Length: 544
Ligand SMILES: Nc1nc2c(c(=O)[nH]1)N[C@H]1C(S)=C(S)[C@@H](COP(=O)(O)O)O[C@H]1N2
Ligand SMILES: [Mo]
Image 1 (cartoon, rainbow, N blue to C red):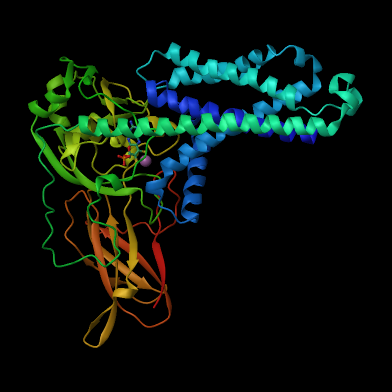
Image 2 (cartoon, rainbow, N blue to C red; image 1 turned 90 degrees about the vertical axis):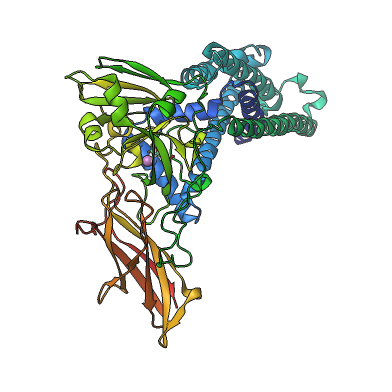
C-alpha cells in the first residue's frame, strides 16, 4: 500500500467512524439502542482470561496513579474512554483495509456495492455481540439491525471515499484522469473533497454526541428523582462526633459522601433496574420458594443498619478503592429462614442484572446475623451505580464477593465459583488488615511544651475484626510510636488514627503498621492485590 493511501485511509477512517460512534451514542441515549463500543469492550473483558484482564486493570490503575489522579473517581471514565478509543482504532484499521483493497482492485471503483459487503463483514460480529450483551429495553433484533445498518453505511461510504481519494499508481493513470492527467488538479480536488467530508462528519459527530449528552443528563436526573423511596429515614448523626481524637488535617473523610464512594463494576456503564417492576425470586433447594418485591423486603423484615467500610480486593496499599457509608437492609438469615432450605442446601448462588454472580455459604449466613440484603445507603435508596435496588453485605469480605443489582437467588447444594473467583481471585476474599498514612500535616504543626509536633494521620482497617493498635516509624529505624485511635463509626468500619510527631527538620519517610483487635499484626510482606488482596506497609515522605 502506498504511504499516501495509508494516510488517506486513516484520515477517512477517523472521519467516518467518529460520526458513526456519535450516532450510536445518540441512539442509545434517545431510544436505548445500546452503545456498541461499550458492549464490545464489556464482551472482550468477559471472555478474556482472568490474568489478562487483571493485567489490563493493573495497567490502568498504574497509569492513573502515575498521572496523580484519583482511581476511585476516574477509573470508570478512563475505561469508557479506552472503550471508545479502541472502537475508533478498530474502525480506522478497517477503513485502511478497505483503502488497501480499493487500491489493489481497481474494479471496486465500478462496483461500490462491495462496500455493503465490507460493512456486513465488519458489522455482523459487532452487531451480534452488541445485541447479545446489551442491557436494553429494546428487542435485541432491533439493536442488531441498527448496528448492522450503521456498518453498512460505513462500508458503502468507505468504498466511495476510497475511490475518490486513492492516489492512483502513475503507471495506471488513464486518460480519464483529466486533460493532461494533471496531478495538481487531482490534489486540489481531493483537498476540497476532504474539506466537505470533514465538515459533514464533524457536524454529525458534534450534533450527535451533544444531543446524546443532553438526553443522558436529563435522563439521569429523572431517574434520581424516581427512586426516592419512602420509609427510610434521613442519615443519622455520626456516633463518634464527641471523640477527643480529631483527625489530622488532610485525613480522608471518616464518612464517605455517597457520590465519592468508590465504584467498581464489570461493565462500562452501571446497570439500570426499574424498582417498580423488579422482584427477587428465591428458588432452588427450598420448601417455600418466594418472590419478594422491594416493598416486601422493606416491610416484612425489620430494617437493620450499619456503618460499613467496603474495600475492593484490587485496592493497592494506600489506594482509594475503599469507602465508608451507612447501609440499611433486611437480615439475610430471616429471609433464608422464610424460604425453608431443604437438608441438601449448602449455598446461595446470587445473580445480578449485569451478568455478575457469586456464591455465599449458608453456614456463613447462619453464623453471622449481620449479613444483610441492603436497599439503602446513607438513608436513601442505593444509587444506580452502587447496585439499586438490592445488594448484599458480607462482613469481612472484599467487594468482589458481594453482588450488587441482585436479580435472583438460587439455593444450591454444590459449590459454584463466582465471577472473579473463576478469574482466579481468592475464593474467600477475606479482607486483609491495612493501614494508610493519608497526611503528614506539615503546615498545621502544633507546639506542645516547647516541642513542635506535626500531626500525621490516616486510616486502618481489618474488616470486622477491628484494630487495636496503629504505630508509626520514622526513617525506617528506631522505635514504633503508638498512634491515637479514634472510636470507629462501627465495628465494621475503618478507624481513623493520629500521631503527633515531634519532628526534626529535614526530609523524612514515615511508615505505618497496625494490629488487629486480637493482636494479629498486619502482614508486612509486600504482595500485589492479586489474588488475595494487597499486603505490605504504607509509607509517605515529607519535608519538614
Ligand atoms: N453485580 C455486580 N456486583 C458487584 C460487582 C459487579 O461488577 N457487578 N463488583 C464487585 C466488586 S469487585 C466490588 S469492589 C464492589 C464495589 O461496590 P461499589 O461500586 O458500590 O463500591 O461491588 C461488587 N459487586
Ligand atoms: Mo472489587
